[in-house]
Amino acid sequence: MPKFIRFLHDSFPNKKDPRLVVTCLRFGTIPVRVYQPKSSSAKPRSAIIFCHGGGGIFGSLKLYNSLCCHLSRESDSVLLAIGYRMVPDHKYPAPIFDCLSGTIHFLRNLNTYGVDPSRVVLCGDSAGGSIVAALCQMLLNQPDLPKIRAQILLYPFLQGLNFQLPSHQQNKNVPFLTWKLLFYCVASYLDIPLSWETAIKNGANMPPEMWEKVEKKINVHYIPKRFKQKGYQPMSFGPFNETAYLETKQILWKFHAPLIADNDIIAQLPEALLVTCENDILRDDGLLYKKRLEDQGVPVSWHHIEDGFHGVILSFNTKPFFFPCSLRITNIVINFMKNL
Image (cartoon, rainbow, N blue to C red; front, side, top):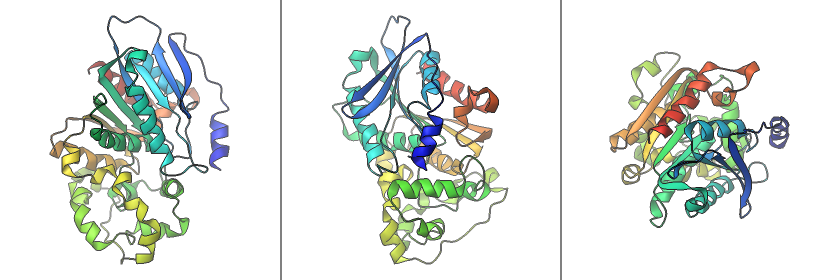
């Protein structure tokens, strides 16, 4: 199914942008596309390293080509899009390691692309946002590389420990990311049997002592009241199931949950642009990460899209399925880049 879906969305032709030079390369074995404005620049340009979304199942360099062209052209930035390996042939840790390797290679060769080392931004939507958040934390231990100037997170997935947050209940059946699809993506990526769906949803796979350690970081009490007024019922976790824990414990690793990183890690992170959508099952991940960043003194530019839903940014130039909020999101990203 994943391969067939990617075949379908890649069957539409890409349009060339006469104002850009788009180069298809490989960094080692990793396919990438580099987008560069044709116009001359008096100084080195800013750069966007883009990790696409799709839960490791959907998405590709080709699907995101129009969006990458638009962001590069309108922000006058060099953009690197990384084509990481995906499900079903490649599971964890292939996607995040591909993005890490591609990012490091690019950071070590910024002069080749005319990029200002002080203005490199990581950007991703959905699962790509999850990868970006993790990369920003991982790159803190790379003093030989240019520092990341900012992180742009568009409706990101940031934790798999608590699936009883208000947005999980309110938006569990909202396209294009229902609970069933979200769990399928997570389970496929982490090689978790689908039969553990109920246990994971109810938190029965998490040891009580672990919940005590992370409760303050993903507690519903930190979500503003207005997001809990519609269709939310507080629920307690189910009784601990040790077998479920042993077979699904990888979902609890900090590596997959940037939201629960230690305070000293969060405090060192770069400035963030965070976009959340009201009608998104992952909305509250973003709200909680916003609080964690702000509590540790990290500047956050937060934009909440009241009429937005998961994956909407891909409709920004598709006339039959255009949603105005998608263009608002792209403009938010472009303005953020221009003001760096």
